[in-house]
Length: 201
Image (tube, rainbow, N blue to C red; front, side):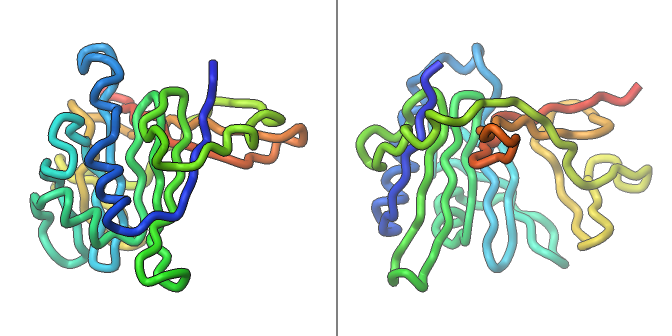
C-alpha cells in the first residue's frame, strides 16, 4: 500500500481553502467506511466530533469549554480560531498547528495517509517514510461514565465533561492509530485512523 506524507506552511486563508476543498468526500461512498472525525484545540475550548464530508466547513460541531455547557457551533469558526487540530479517518489524517511566532499567519499543515486528500497544495515528503515500518496500534481514551451523567464522559483530573462522537453506550472508547517506526521501534510519525468503542455488557 502506498503511503503519503505531505507538508507545508500555509496562510490561514489557504489553510481554510484546503479544508473546504479536501477530496476525501469523493474517495469512497459513506456506507463503505467509518466516519471521519475532527479534533480541535483552541485557547477557549476544544471539539471532538464527527466530520460531515459533504458540508465541510459549513457543518456544525459540538464545542466544549471549561465551566460552560457545550454548544453546537459552525465548524469554520472553530477551525479559524484553533491552535491545533486533526481531521482523520481510515484513509488519512490532516493535522495542523497555528504558529504565529513564525509569521503573522502560519499554519503548519501535515497530511499522512494512503489516499491523497490534498493534491498539490502540500509538498510531497513521502520519501521520509521509505525506511520506516508501518504498525497499527490502539489506545484507550480518557474519561469515565457515571450513573448521574450516563451520556457524558467525565475527566476528573481536568475536570471536564464531554461526549464522544460514538453511537451506542460504550464502556470505553479507544483511538486506532498507525505508526511508522524505525529499526529500533522508535515511532517517527503517528496518525489517528478511527475511534472504536467497547460496549457495556
